[in-house]
Length: 167
Image 1 (cartoon, rainbow, N blue to C red):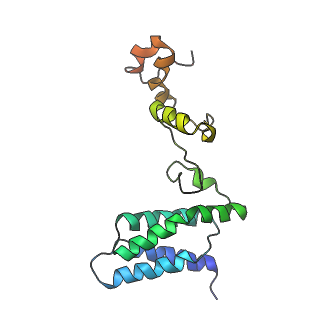
Image 2: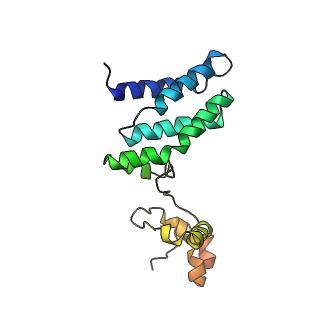
């Protein structure tokens, strides 16, 4: 009997291959079959779950049939439970924090946002926001914001690539 991880990876590979094959009638049925099988499997690592999520997003955006879209969207609605299951199993979830994939249901959103977006988030969700200054690397983006607090920087902020905010 094959280990579950081999079956999972084989099905993910198969879905990846099928996702963009349009035109021939058997393809939507094959996609639906693979989606149904994957929906019943338990994921043991975040990387496989991320890959599945990306495939589901593609199928939702570019469905081969209405049924395939419905299945993909239905599975996406269960993702917070899948993330919770990984968390309960004490799996390494650090790859879910990458800005490229952050925001999967049940996870946080990590990114470098503009001041207006941060202000909007802070106003609507003040207890759910944290700033991770250790993660922040693109200090040049601060040049947009600092003139609000230090008016003398306003002229430099739009011209200088490296505004001397740390002074």
